[in-house]
Image 1 (cartoon, rainbow, N blue to C red):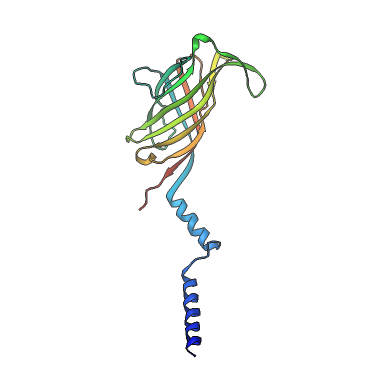
Image 2: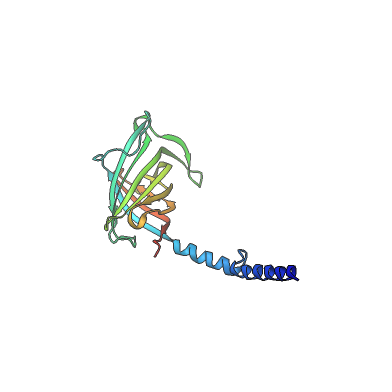
Length: 204
């Protein structure tokens, strides 16, 4: 009789414990996990317009090889700003093939039209917004292409950039997109960066 009572008690205990655990395969569990994930970060698409010019008044971020040149760019957003975060300044440094060696001539665009190009790599830079928050980015590698358009010689580069965190609201930020930039005079570079940014939300 004592063994029967112990067995019944054990079954009741197990049954009550089961009710305290949520089946990880259930819709209820997956729904709660999704909501939790949504609270931790938010993602949005964007298009930011800005310009840069050559500026060598700051220290290099990136070490370059002997056959490369350091390039320094500074600039700011186009007003009215296309960023919901407000206006920003930007600064970047990268390594490019030495211009004295001349461009490579064996490039082709998506239509098979040949163009000349200079390779560049390891772009590191940041956007500094009006509120003091900073968003860091990198472009691992790319090509500055040279061709002829309606306004004569045109340079353009459509390469992948990656966000690598920052400060303030951009701490832990990630995302990527395409540079979509061009220049018709080699002095002012017009940027139209398009992509997606993911921000980490602060826990309440």
